Image (cartoon, rainbow, N blue to C red):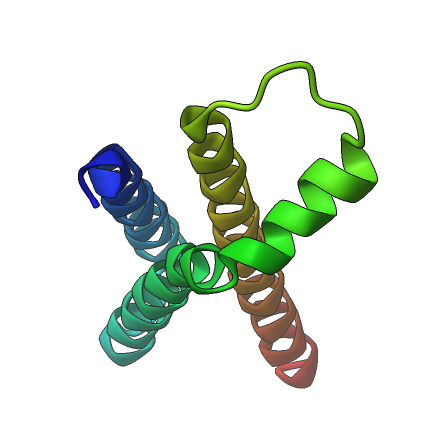
Length: 116
């Protein structure tokens, strides 16, 4: 369990980074306070789940990485598995953040087009 401590700390810092980006984006776009809080909470929850999913499905992701993508590893260290899990968590967080950006842009575009 001690080997996963850097993974958990890096995951927490990454989630805080994405929540900070959502806060900055929502403030600059002038989104209502309710939407701002809801967006931050949803991105934070998705970020936590994004880092929990690779931890829970460690064997399946490990099989995909070590047997399909990298079939003949020369040497496998436990840190390589942690980096792989962190990368999956980071990609999940990035997708959630991009979905948030796309949604806020689309919602702003639709509200602007209905005002005409």
